[in-house]
Structure formats: C-alpha cells, structure tokens
Length: 124
Image (cartoon, one colour):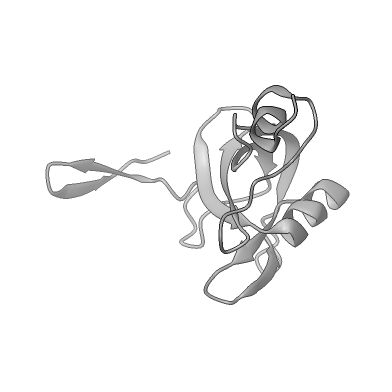
C-alpha cells in the first residue's frame, strides 16, 4: 500500500479527499429510520467541528462560512456515526435530529417525489 489511492481505498487511515473547492459531500440519514434527511457539504473545518462536538457542522456555499445545523432554529443533528465511502470523498452521517431538518419545517429535505413532471409531497 504505497500510493495514496491504495491507502485511501484499502487502508484504515482516514484520508479525506476534498474536491477542488475543499469540500466533501455529506448525506445525512436519520439514525433510527434511515430516512435521508439532507445533503450538505463539509470542508476540513466543518468535519473537524462535527467530530469534536458531536453536532453536525457544514460549509455553507451560499454564505461562504462554517455553520452548525440548528444554530438559529435549535434543530441540531446529533451525530451517531460517520461512514466513509471507498475513495473517501463522500460521507454518510447517521444522526438523531432534534426537530425538523429542513428549513421549510419539513422533517427532512427530501419531502417530495418526482412523478413524471410533477412533484408530490410525501407526508410523514
């Protein structure tokens, strides 16, 4: 295991592979139901804060800064576990939500299903 890709794909060392913008994709799932709650991006700072505090932190591309999920609403995501994909450029984070996850007030950001050309709300 001499090169970085072999170490990333086969090894036990955490070597996150950030994209050209310094980001990883993070898929957040409910620790109890396994529902997909949201998708966000993490930079090195957000990943470190998440691991340090146990609360989900992300990089806001629109605001250009670190933000903690729930910093204004109080609806934090308590991280239970972090899974890393094979080439370490994406994460699945299992979390316990304290309140609605979506800024719209929905339980999760994925609350509509696409059927043909129509979005149909999926009630919880």
